[in-house]
Length: 364
Image (cartoon, rainbow, N blue to C red):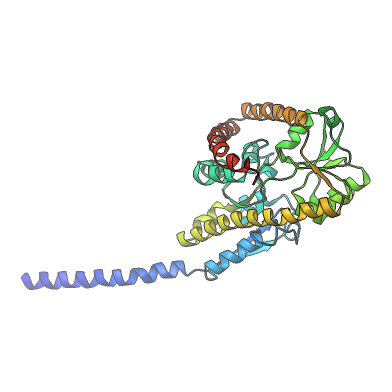
């Protein structure tokens, strides 16, 4: 009995050792799998920031492949190369592609609350938005909002504060907005429409010809670098600087949930790290190139850059509050996101008023 028992224990120990030695091989095989994904984009081929350049979606794809040692390769398709510009949400949700780059406010017709994850008029700047998303519970809310659609969202870029836009004629009072035809998307379009503006939704490539021919009287796109590249300064010279409508602007990455769950944890971590890196990189790049572009527009192109009159800002703020309140009252999901966003905004404003504003008031 004693001998048999020793043989049994010895065999068991050997088997256990074999399993322990074999386990790393099994894990290694799983982690060694190569994934080939597709990413679509809402923006046109060659677009700086939105498609190519530092912190762009194509930059993100390159970073992921490099950090993963080629285990996750992502083929990027700009708008129209695989699907139309604004069909990325459905394409990823259905599993047609694994990823899409766009802005959450494009999906307002499907999910009204999604707009809060791009930009909120008179909301928070980029520092505040990042604080809310990464450390204030905003990203968790975003994930909950998209979960029924089989999507995993995260920030992947930011333009920083945008410009109010280009106007063929100067603005002096709230009355000047009535009857104005303006290209502008998102929540700001709702606000402007309440003040009598005829809001037009035009893709980027149609903005300049429409402004030049007088089909529209004003247009908002992004900021000095992007706007100069489109030639908007050749169609209008009044450039208002108060980015009340988009104090930040988040580029959204959405991932098919089933595809995401199929990734090993280390590849999921690489995707998140690369998205966060591009969020910071694109913002830094935007601030750098906008500074030079604005100086060039004013010094060499005859552009008049100035803040909106205080009377207009005051009225826009009032209408924004009413518009957001109405949206929140009409939809429980929007109410939840709205209340969370505004509560964090209150805390952030208190701190930034002490920290950032205190420093900026020094005239730096």
